[in-house]
Length: 288
Image (cartoon, rainbow, N blue to C red; front, side, top):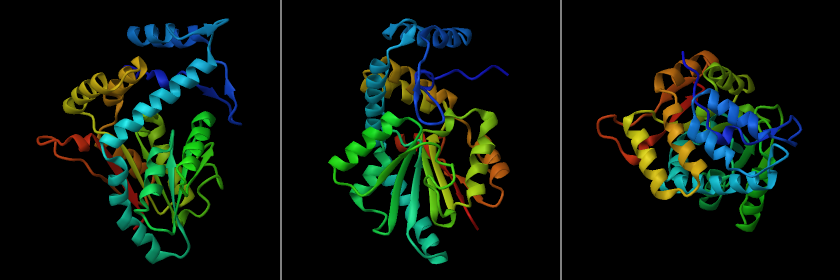
């Protein structure tokens, strides 16, 4: 089996267990991309400023903010926050019926926290729902916190591994774990482990939105990113995301292996009458 191609944004940041950014050698990134035949991606990385062979941290961080702002624009156009709220509302009601205390929504790989901030701004899920975003990148978390404070929102953001006990998921029976555009970044060998981590923590439910791979999503990604995105990295990674996304059957199989105690569904739209919004579809797991 040929190795999966790499997205540039997966290679530009290296962070240790304590959340401290590490130096990223430019030649190392270029060589990895060239080894996979990704010449265009290698040219994009070669154009990034570097000093003593190490990618310029300030430039890369600013680039990361710009790329995530463009991702937020995509989330807005796909009405992601509204769709997340619509799907989670009945699940939250189920959790309320089965236990007491506040319900917590934990967004894994939240980036700039667009979904969490949009849910907080709309109050669509109710006043007893805690909204928490978690990301490994401390710079994105700091910016998400700044934006939430500036917007006067009741939500919080944490840096680290969302599945580390007590970081964000403290009472699994009252927690619902979500993500958007995150799962396709995982290696295929890590999919079952990803779902198993949520099962081990005993979360009430999970819902992970990712791209539905097909000809339409790949073509749509190319048209949208070249029409709406300005960063070469965004254009490259946006189209590649559609190609790297996992089919429903593979996601469902991994979830059933990792979280066998959950009812699993992949809520895909019609392949023959596709809607633009259905390019992101969720895999949902609920405790019976």
